[in-house]
Length: 427
Ligand code: IMP
Image 1 (cartoon, rainbow, N blue to C red):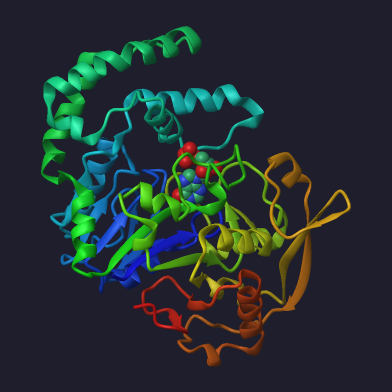
Image 2 (image 1 turned 45 degrees about the vertical axis):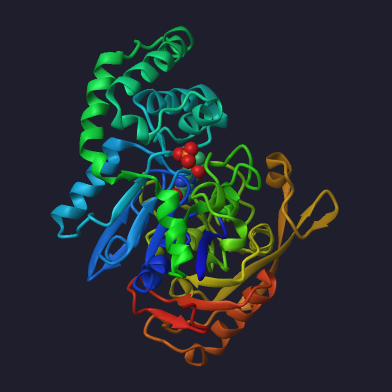
């Protein structure tokens, strides 16, 4: 029963899409379990670049069932747009299924995400403004509307009639914006429902039946561990569960059914949005990494903040998730640097920390303790074997492996599927 979870070890954008795409070929199911259209997974397939937000990265393989699990929040307008775009580019979505339990992003969630961000002023989180925080808040407040509700017109209308007056009070009385109309939302969403109906199912059974048959199931994470509301840099986090725990609640599987957990780390650090980033490089090196790696958000286009590899974060996310193996991505981006730094700990108020503090204000004060490493200043993107990497690059990878304390199985050295060094085959 090989079931592999693929989890971001940093602040998202680690390159999970490429790694899932690499393995999806051999899988029978690729399932998304968290996040929503805030995610952006870039996949290069047959020489074409695709930016996926909601649809699992296995969609390019017709034999793979692609599941959008109950833990994902779905903006139906954006999902339909993504389906249409894929279909127009010759990719079939006949193998897509959507959980009837997945919560829907409603128009008021998107409005409130923007209004709440404005109200936060200088302490704004820098959300993607896709309604993610408000829809997850409604899920736990028991005010949510789910994909399955789209299949029953009367039930959908009556659910909206219960929820919308409450939302309209917030919109009008707190934020002074006009209320939304039940009829308008209803007709818009029921039209989405008609188009999405063929995809909406009980997806837990699909996943469980595949597991019972002993088929390969990939659990595709979104965002990264440091954006997890429990273990990330709270409150500068997302609202889904990017850690491996989210795979269980977001798909209806047991922890004992997950056989391996692959952590994905970039060989440097990026973050998009606000919040502490101890190893951030606000200098020419940071700009150089951003330009070389084209570090701009797939979803929002915002420039990503760049920094050195943060070993404190690396160590911590490996512990939180129990990574059984690791994939490093974007090694080639460091090819031209004469010197590379690796953060091995933090110093704060005279103390040495090996793990990040819970409090964002304390994390802001943490000073990274660096180890200097020699750069290799040679191209690596054409290399396919670890032993062919320059000695300095091998030393760098070995150092990261020691810090993370989990074996490195793959190193990605470029955007295309072929640009990968396999140290230990995963499948
Ligand atoms: P939200 O998920 O839109 O609420 O945004 C909360 C925080 O998570 C912000 O800092 C976003 O920039 C960040 N975030 C959300 N999704 C992603 C992602 O896929 N990659 C990187 N950062 C993300």
